[in-house]
Structure formats: C-alpha cells, structure tokens
Amino acid sequence: MSPPSLHDLCYSQYEPSHFTQVRELFKTVWGANRSDECDAKHWNETLTGVCPGVVGLCEGQIVGFYMVWPMPFSDGQEQVMGGQPIDSMVHPNFQGKGMLRELACRCYELSNKGKLAVMFGAPNRAAYAGNVGALNWCHVGNILEYLRPLAPMSHHNVRWIEQGDRWICDSADSRLSGCTVQRDCPIDLGLQCEELSPLKRSWQVSRTAQWMNYRYRSVPDAEYYAVRLPEDRGRRGAALCGFRKSRLGMKATLVETITSDEDNRKAVISAAISWARHKGARYMVAKSTNNHPNEQLFWRGFIPFRRTALISRTLSWRCYSANPFSPKAWSLFGGAFDTM
Image 1: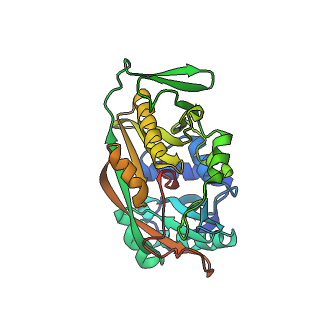
Image 2 (image 1 turned 90 degrees about the vertical axis):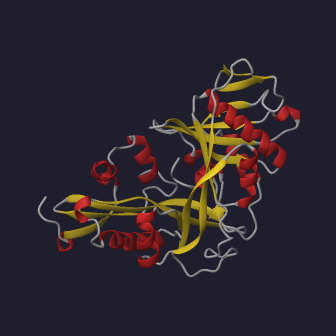
Image 3 (image 1 turned 30 degrees about the vertical axis):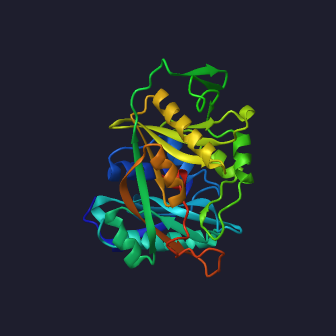
C-alpha cells in the first residue's frame, strides 16, 4: 500500500458484500479472527437486519470500520431502540489521523436514520479520550468486572446427568438437586423474561423474547446455556452463562439472572457456578453497573478486579423517563456488553 493519506479515502455504508474484507481488517488489527457465524450474528443478522455501519476505503481496500450494534432498551416506562458501538477498527497505517472520528460521525447519522435513539459504550483507555473529547460522549459511571476462580468439581458430590436435550443435577445439596440446563435460551424462558417488570427511571436492556433468543444463540466460539431451578419445588429462577476458550483455559461468563426473588437468585447463581465447573471452566466472570446484583456476586465468591468507564450518548432530542446522562440511571449486567 502506498503511503497513506486521508485525502485518498472514501466512505460507504456497510453492506454484507463488505463482510470478507472487514474480517480481513479485523485480523490485521486484532491479530486473529472470530468465527464467520459470530461476525455474521453481530454485523449482518441483528435485530434490525444489517447493522448501521460505515467502512473507509482506500484504493478499493477497506481500511476502517465503525458500527453500532442495535439493542432494545427500556427507560423504565417504554421501550427505546438504541445500540452499542462495537468492533470499531482502523488499519495501523491510518491510525492517529482522525479517520475513526469521521467513521463514527457518519455511522451516528445512519443510526439516527435507523431510529436508534440512545447508546452506551465501554471504551478502553486508548479510545476513552477520543469518545469523550471528540464525539460528544458523556462519562456516566463505571462497569465493574468480577472474577470467581473455580476449583475442579468433585464428581462424588454433584453430577450433571444428560437426559435428551437437557442436563439434570443430581446432588445431596438441596439448592442444586433437580436444577436443569439447556443449550441457548429456550423460547419459554425468553417469554418469562418479558413478564419481569423493568426498573423505574433506569436504563436497562429490554429483555424481550426476540432479544433473548437472538442474543444467546450459540456460535462456534461462544456457547450459551440456560440454568434453571426446579419449579416443582416452588422455586422459579434461571441464569444464563456463556463459555469461550481463552489463553487461560475455558472461561465462563454469567450473563443473566432471571428472577425477582433474592433467595432464588442466590440459588441459581450457585447452580450456574456448578455447571461451569462441570464444563471445565477455570474461572467465571460477571460485569455489572448495578449495585444491587453485586451483593449476590459477593456472597457467591466473586471478587471485583477491573473497572471500565461507562459512557453514553443520545442521537435524538427526546426526553425520557430516565436521564441517559445521570450516573445512577444505567443498570446493565452481563449480556448487555458485547464481550461474551
């Protein structure tokens, strides 16, 4: 490639025909690719179809990419379509020249036309200044990441027995015995999520059945499982956890807890930990902006170990039940973030 110049660039709306070249750019920037299915899920098969995205081209080659991943939000009173910028990247030869800002501004215009109204982000340290200083994002809080080491499971105390399309826990521990596990998010569990009332005056992901079934559909490099309490004993609750191989071994992520009862929440987190051990995970992580579920994580041995900035931005002038720029307005957990 000839010496780069921003004057040689042109910009285009992302189309599925760009898929292969964007994957090549991803490998150049990040060093390795994810599976085709994972990228297609995030870029081409979102809740609104193809994601709002912009590519930067130099001599016909894609050298920059910026997209917003569409997500359904609730402000505590109504559902609002919004999104989260993910997978933004610029070829190393063009970094530090202002290209990312141009891509972002064009992408926000597309997102606004696509009826996305509110966004949140979790930038790394290198991207934080550019988002807050040049793209009008507001720092509204922090995302805490928790870690729980997992000791190898004693098969004498707990067994997960495969029966058809699910696994059933056999254990002397009454909290675990009878719990079941199914792959992905079952349709009835997605419908159960819709019955839960949203938090008032708070921004959160709207857990519609459509979102849950889309978000927790397994792909080759990320598997999802639903862990459920036995309802025949008067307990109702579930958790979703994801699994991905990492350089440190199998990584488990607690992405959802689905119950309105705190005792059931404790029980289902314990069941999710047991299932993670069964799967051979060496550790489990969880992310949260909300202080309330964090208490349950502490009680189950999770330790806070990393903090990331939470930023927000609006794409419209509407007024909402919850202020998107208030430090206390965002209640996000696990699967709200794109990392698992």
